[in-house]
Image (cartoon, rainbow, N blue to C red; front, side):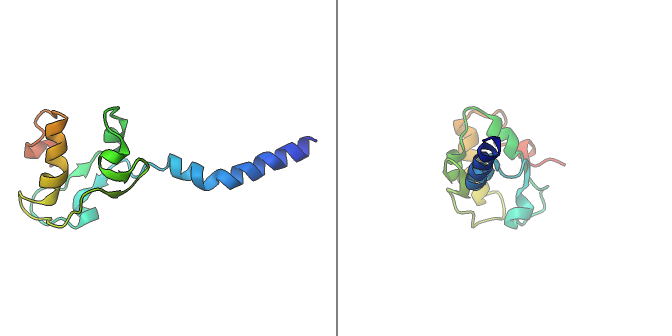
Length: 113
């Protein structure tokens, strides 16, 4: 009886393993945006604190991503150079403004050495 129960538990875990793995996968804790998106420019790379943003109870994955589970970004990052790049205009600055992030549009808030 015990062996049969253990077999059923093992089979259940194997059946749900892909779901459990996806649910636990929250992406990288930190993301180098310059590296990941091929951003051009002389400014220091922005190391996006992904885990810190995820820990904010006011933010859910679908704030930036197409689904509540994450995945593809809602915005397309095409312009990757200069002050008027898509990160500033479409992603970071609008959210920092909405969330009242102190110094949310100051370069050194995100571009750090």
